Length: 154
Length: 220
Image 1 (cartoon, rainbow over the protein chains, first blue to last red):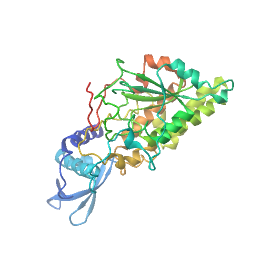
Image 2: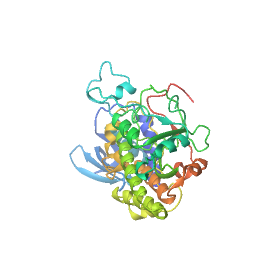
Image 3: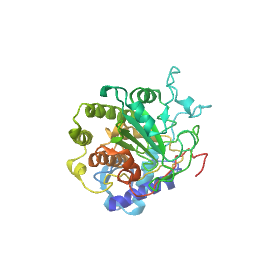
Image 4: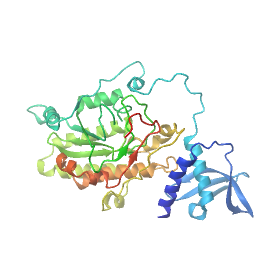
């Protein structure tokens, strides 16, 4: 249950904090170590063991169980993960990027695949899937169920 | 999937040559999720494997309309190719199997696949609906254009998704994969018409809302 709650906090915080800019990797945790709030950066997060590996400014590595952390510290970890995962690419974006439509999916060298032919009636698909007299000629059917219209709005 | 996966030449070649493509709309289906509509040329946003499992499902059928494999939610091109390969191999096995043993082949093949993906026997044998259903993590994150590169570990049918340090989303992705395979194991060779009447064993009974960070031009 605790894990589910933390995951929920993690996901919600992704949405809430996604635009925060990273100024410094080190974060001030409320977790007390040596009589002081811990200032450390997050280097690893283990989803299975539910612990986080922190490295303090002094270079000391600490593995802390998530259950030991209060909500403010959990938020800091979410913030750190979000920085690591969703930071903007370092290289300068292309000035005039191609629109990400069919044309943008061309393979290097200009190779373009044939557009797929989709049957809307199962009967017709099944007829085509039955290749002939021999069972070996049969093909499987790939059925794409989609909310909307594959050829239009979806 | 339309903009990214079905437009990829290798996917197109494989699907055109080795499969017959069939599509239906789930509009009006109570089990369908909701989404912001996209036009064919809307830009594609980043997406996790399995996102929008109530909005899109890719199922593999015999010509007689029996479902032998399923993958719900978004599939990146490499994921889709992996599913196509698996489906091809399983279909070939079914073709060579006596009718009374085909369901067993479906179950065994999916079990074997889950074992290869390092799912435990307890996970595979757990009972109940949608046990593996991943958290419905729909990404609506501005400036999140690194997701796809980050999620390499979560793609390719979850093979690299066993390392949660490399991929904190792995549990969600793997949960979805587990749900899909278990659906096929629990109901091997389910008829398409029966599935159409009640898709909830695969898609669950919850309601999901899908939106990519590219937005959508159509509204819903």
